[in-house]
Image (cartoon, rainbow, N blue to C red):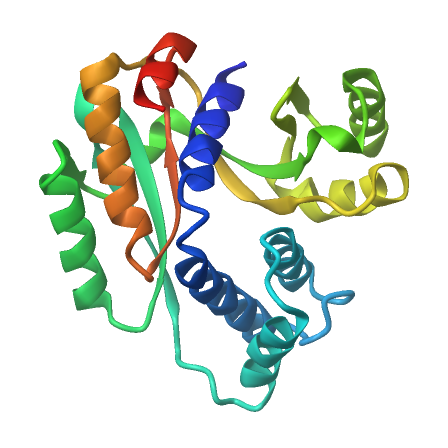
Length: 247
């Protein structure tokens, strides 16, 4: 399935960067603070905050850190972050969507443009890439949540639009407006999700060879290293044989 390969490859890169935990915590904290500031500071009453807290728990972020990020928003101590999306073309004709949370627009666009241009890509105009993606909800579960059939039936019952399962876990895709309702309906059956967020799902995939994949992963690494960058979505598909060589 189109979304599956893209997500699997992104998860592969994330797994290779577990050592960058402090940077990951910084990004998670930022998302928690923004979510708490935009709605109620109670995860049960604020779907975006609930998703952010669950994502932080999945990354083993300490409870104290999570609470501090929520309190920061409640007390009005938080910086004013804005959400900015950049669209880019990467090596091998790959399309990328870069989501950021920033308190300095000029710094972020400079850093994003530099990371992309130094690694075989170029920044596109707004809308140049996003037309090739669908904005959807994405709920992720680890493989241990249940077998393929159990997850598929639960997702169908909850109102999901598509499901993809592999040894790496389960991806449940929903309509954009149904994300939190579906996530809530799945919880009694599958437990707490590993992640629940709005995502960019590619309509078509671009298969990349070893050379382009190597450059592409350097580009994604460079973007991931930037505190302002929250998520990078792409329409690339890397064959397993290539992944093994790069691994």
